[in-house]
Length: 337
Ligand SMILES: CC(=O)SCCNC(=O)CCNC(=O)[C@H](O)C(C)(C)COP(=O)(O)OP(=O)(O)OC[C@H]1O[C@@H](n2cnc3c(N)ncnc32)[C@H](O)[C@@H]1OP(=O)(O)O
Ligand SMILES: N[C@@H](CCO)C(=O)O
Image (cartoon, rainbow, N blue to C red; front, side):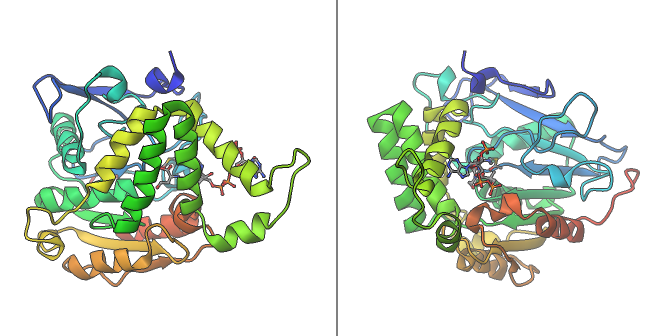
């Protein structure tokens, strides 16, 4: 079996099972990981929501014997911004890193960001978390985070939205639909093509130019071509093409204002103390999208700008700047509040 189906390299995953019909599924499982301990008042729980190809493994190396790095290692562990909190990170519904996904169901239904959040609400109920001290997410994780704050305003005390949007834009849908088209033509090769298209959009034009320019390798490939080949092969080895399609189409359908009187009306529901941040060089989720979120969410400051040459991927790379925002949002927790 491919590693992405059952892989749990750290042996840290737990599973939540829902046995009733849900969003066109007969039931579902969510894989999740936790760090820290829920306090007596259940007031120290933080929900961390991953991006498109992420998973529940936010951090590695926190406990002995669990060294595999995570995608936001800098946030969790002694002295780090989420020290003292009970951190919960689920693999998204429709994903392929332990949660119910298309590989298990031949006629897997189309899912929305709202369905995915509704599944996470059931997980929160099962964990005894009535209210999150914070919900944090970037990119697709930010879509789920804003949906949480709009759909469940009384359950989100504070909110960090990074490099994300209130609704998918025409350009995002266009880039994503080309990726979906490639996978539908050829699931295996197509996933690599999709990753190449996506990865270009995750980095800035300036970074690619300065880093690779027109350099050619000994094998005749441009260096930048080889770089994309590398990222394509790495994703193909760890991700399910059908899951990529399900998640991409959920992102394309994302519109927090749909059926709620529009984006402005939806954002007015948010009660969380909110920080919205974007990346100055992000061409996929440009700052205007975060300005719309910040302008619409009551009490949110103007958008914070992460300065970085790395484009959209900066929300994964610029750990000092992201960590500072998290510390500002959720000041150090004693663990006994
Ligand atoms: C929440 C989530 O989103 S989790 C999912 C996040 N992870 C991913 O998306 C995996 C794909 N990777 C990425 O998106 C990015 O690499 C990041 C954001 C994780 C990290 O960015 P950076 O640290 O800037 O890494 P960078 O883009 O330079 O890639 C480095 C890799 O490219 C390889 N590489 C660099 N130049 C070349 C080249 N010319 N030819 C071939 N390979 C190359 C490096 O050897 C390195 O390989 P490795 O990752 O297997 O060790
Ligand atoms: N590298 C990230 C970017 C998407 O936001 C991912 O693959 O999830």
